[in-house]
Amino acid sequence: MAFLDETDKAAFPSDPRTSLSLNPPSTIPASWFAALKLPGVSGPSFLSFSSSMASQMIREWAGINQFPTATQDKLLGLLGRLKQENVTTMTILVMGKGGVGKSSTVNSILGERVAAVSAFQTEALRPMMCSRTRAGFTLNIIDTPGLIEGGYVNEHALEIIKRFLLNKTIDVLLYVDRLDSYRVDNLDRQVVKAITEAFGIDLWRRGLVVLTHAQLSPPDGLSYDEFLSRRSEAVLRIVRLGARIRKQDFQKQPIPVVLVENSGRCDTNELGEKVLPNGTVWLPNLVEKITDVILNGTKPILVDKKLIEGPNPNERGKIWIPIILALQYFFVIRPIRQGISDDINQEARPLWELRDMGLADRRY
Image 1 (cartoon, rainbow, N blue to C red):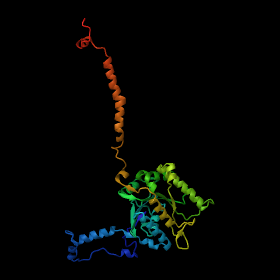
Image 2: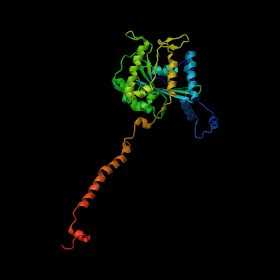
Image 3: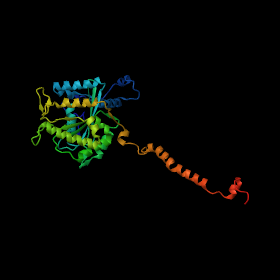
Image 4: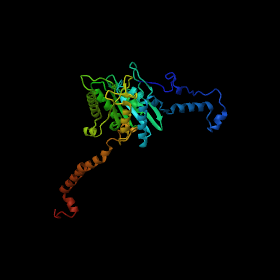
């Protein structure tokens, strides 16, 4: 997964948004900077500051305009539904194994190529967040590297992802896998377990399973819906076991499964929208499921230092100290003290002690 610089003119030579030059002219009147009333800020350094700020500005979600009109209307309607619930920012975290279509799904949602995808290119080890705004709504999508390397969970990649997400709030997790895979194994379970241990079990309350490569012909004479049902059940079972979610909790709040087809061979309907073999217009359906998760009543996940580093080992077990001390007193110290007292009381006293106490017979 290699990423493109959004300001790279070479990558998008025909994009008019990249034609804006931020290089300052050779001479700039000093009165321009005096009028800004910024003491101590010289012309060139101010332009450098302005250029830096410009590069951090969130771009308009122009990619939505390349979708068919019907798709645009559905997406804007879903964004309006979120705004009615006072949700004006949405951050989506995309995770999974490598080669399952995470970056392609990010590109499909945004309607533009922000992540380079190649079958002959290895994935980069750094996450990438792309932000777009539309009609007062901000969409952030975080693409991450695959979590498998050499047949094992890549702990280094997971650590990089954790540090990247520090102090960010995750509204939705997209756990991506392929529909055209015919088996799940212990490695899939280990990936889910690693995600859960890194970000907590509550992340799955905000999760969706996304199955890519959905434009397929099922094997063994199965119908499309039957194959989808079997594959979905297998992946969801791995998620439940890997995340250690209780079966009754999983049934009470099931994780939605959404289909995606990012390739150009996806069929279209009469309105030009991309449809799957079961007739689902997949992009609006994906965004609708994301909207449902955001409004399901659970809290977003704040990735703070405590979450990614775990509890302080020095604090672990402190809650039991008062209980242990109380048990020690009542079942150890107190019986010992009582036994000593009883021994003292039962001990035969010498005559001289009894004489001093006036208790002994004076005839001795």
